[in-house]
Image (tube, rainbow, N blue to C red; front, top):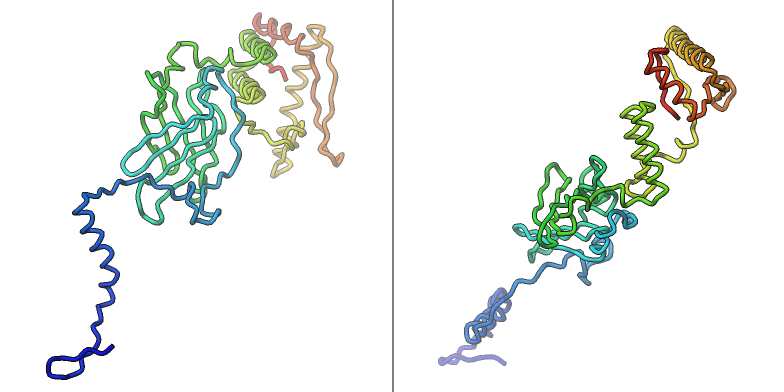
Length: 322
């Protein structure tokens, strides 16, 4: 309906500027807030967690399943629980034997939420549990994010500190009264009896100087892997390979290495014959029948004789048990 002025002129319809209709609800809300003392309370951001408006591809997507629960029995009660830590605008969540996540506490539409690591294996030093490795987190350039969780004695179960020592590698400190006892983090008591016996045998071999320190560490590593405390780093194909053929860039180097190995083999043969230890020659091929390698098969029970001979100066070389 047209409007008319006092002089009879026709007026144009009143039109509000475009931004004004958008501002009206805000102005009305401001008035109501002033009248009713309304207060806006910030709530934790749920971007990437349970936001129903996001497609599944934008939510947290783990790259792998957590490893089986393992370690000290008294720590298993932490499974299924999560512990939070807020620093600046970020909230970190540590779920033992599951994962570590990071959530940006903001109303930004693209606030970050991601996985910093999934339960992978234990960190073991001096045969003691010192921390938990959470690996295979979200992508970070050419690698995946990972987190090491250090376990320290504390009055309560809580995350006490979070840091990023290097790019995309995080460090969390978790305090708990469950590790305050001096023996609470020893590895040996957590193993089944069969693996404990294997450990005892390895200790005896080291004591008798039948294996080196490096061999000792390698065998303990394999033992921890068998007990599901550490992830296996060996490839199945490599397990089936007994010996790999040596490769040389010249015939001269090949001949020199062959001569050296032949001399070592002869010394070992003479040593075994001297002490009356039976042995057999084993041939290894590379599959095509063109190359063979000679080795000596010796019973582990006979190695003590060789060790005693070494201690008395009867022989120079020392060979590790296989």
